[in-house]
Length: 111
Length: 112
Image (tube, rainbow over all chains, first blue to last red; front, side, top):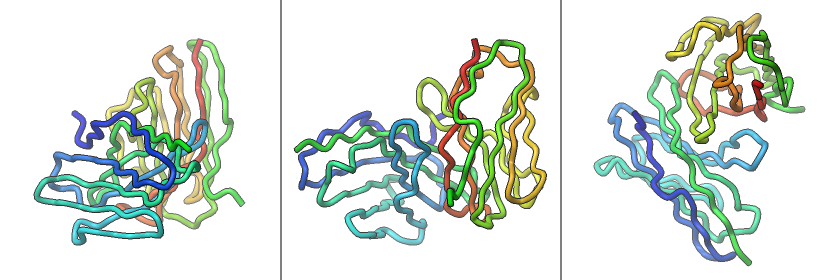
């Protein structure tokens, strides 16, 4: 039972443009949401997170938006750079700390 | 100065063997985890320890046994390996339960 869903398996974006990655969840007990970036043959790297008491968190080029009523979050990357090409995982957890991951979105940034 | 490290990085073995994967973190975190990434690329939690105490134990065959000798180490022992155990296993740690988790580089296990 997938409680965290990333419905777009891939995204292609031009360098300098905005990348928007989407994620939906079903469990209303989730109170902490994270985005991880993963390069091939490496572990996931933490990018940015947001608590359920907020609706936006920004860190440099990365902004995460949370819409609790829609059970939806998104990650915006502006501007996109070639080094951003990777798989991005959305994850959600409750206070127990059990992270549930989405299936990932492969982002390709083209020149 | 690697934060979360795993050994070995690659493990190729025969069905029926017993193997261990080791994980160490130097972040001073209290909580450690094991995740499995299967062939469909889903990352799923297997176990979590908080201060050497098991706190999460998902539906995992009892051939898998985690061991935490101290807060900085969480090892995974697998008995009687099966073909379906082939996957990438990731260790992670966090300061406490429900906090941001930091992952190791993964151990690629191939059972022949």
